[in-house]
Length: 333
Image 1 (cartoon, rainbow, N blue to C red):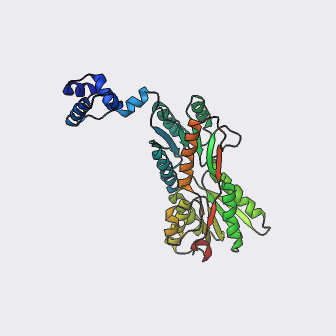
Image 2: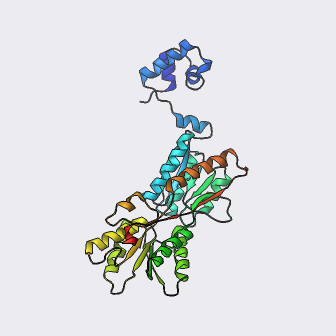
Image 3: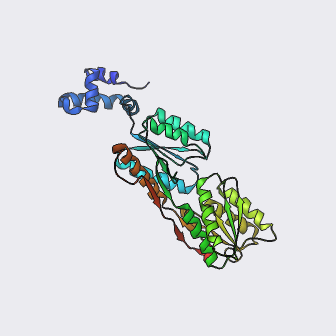
């Protein structure tokens, strides 16, 4: 049975109010009494219930973070950056994984509301901003992460994915490839759609280039492997692939290596997106479009804290980073 404040008060021969003062305002209590209460706490193994205390005060010392795919190292790095910045202000981060599922996302948002978090960072699932708007109207600030809704009142931290898609395919064209395939996840994911827009823009600049779009159910290694196995069976193949993220690209590499019929980059050049840590350690080091994942998380918390302390202040509410092309062996030979 948990030890209560009343148990501590009895053991120290003081009132419950005195124990509360020792815990919260020790400067108001005589040093001898403080020592006696602390000794009782140590002897009984009392642990204060900070969560309950904070909820009674109408706030908590936490923020909520909901990502599309916690299994993607990119989002793990975003979370790490957010946690690092949050800890600087004594805040903890509660992490939720929506799997791009609106109902799962809604469940986490309800949980965060019950926990009275200071604010919410979220990469929203498709078409779920109504609930976010209601949460913000109720006094809980919301910052979009790796996502932006132009013209909305949400603060956001994102990367120019159209530019990223353009950089990836322009690079493939510059190394002489012309039959480009874009392999991505559901088109409903805004980041995927924007990367495809950039890819189309690059291809449109070359009259002799073509772009084939291959849509997979999800942005995972297994889906990349399935796409690679299908390409191996084809008589006519692309000579370059732009994968919408590095996990897909890793799966493609696995499939080509398993069948030992297609060489990267000799037969097919391959570039991914995100530049996760594993990209440089694959069997053929993977070219990629780098996003500053930890900086995105760090900046999102910074923006959230600004919106809490100075909601009407004059500061940039929509931060957008530029992506960076990282060339490795998968496109350089």
